[in-house]
Each structure stands twice: as structure tokens, then as C-alpha cells.
Image (cartoon, rainbow, N blue to C red):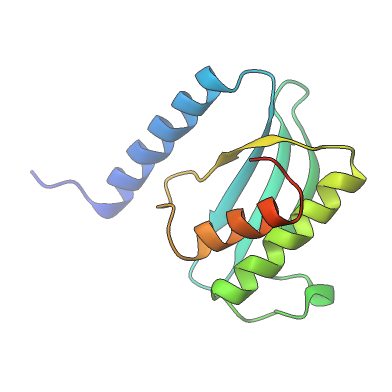
Length: 119
């Protein structure tokens, strides 16, 4: 029986997150979510269970509402890097979830790195 796209996505997400948890214990997690219309990212402290910073393409001050392309992802990545610095965070591990590290997800990660965040 063939697996559905959703099942494969969920398996990939769990595999990625569990591997990262083992390797990067104690570090903050930069979690990405991409939909067909938007992209969002959160900086999460799993020990305390709190979100320290977040950025999304839905925010009006970024000027990319209604756009979901590589340029919008790069602006979201730059915004999260800036907000992480304000929160006193310099490094985190990149949790791409079940999304492939390509296109919008890669653009977000590269922009966050250029903004000074070590991921």
C-alpha cells in the first residue's frame, strides 16, 4: 500500500526532530512552518516550553502580506534574526520539520544566518 503525502511528511518531521533533539540538547529550536499561502518561524525554548520570538509573512510591518515566495521567506528570516538578537539569542538549531531544505525554507535559513543567527 502506498503511503500518502501527509503520512510521509509526518514521518519525516518526527525523524528530523528526534535526530536534532539528540544532537542539540539544551539549545533553542528555530521551528519553521510553511503553508501554501504563508511562512512562519518561531524561536522556541523546549526546556521552559516558551516561544521567545516569532516572525511570519502575515505581519503587516514586513510588507509582504499575501506573498509566499523566496523573497518573502528571506524577509521573515531577517526579521527572526533581528528579534532573536533582541531576545539575547545568538545560536539555535534549525528545525525544518517535514519540509525539504530547499527553496523558501533554505532562503529563510540563509537570511537568518546573514542576520547573525548561528543555525
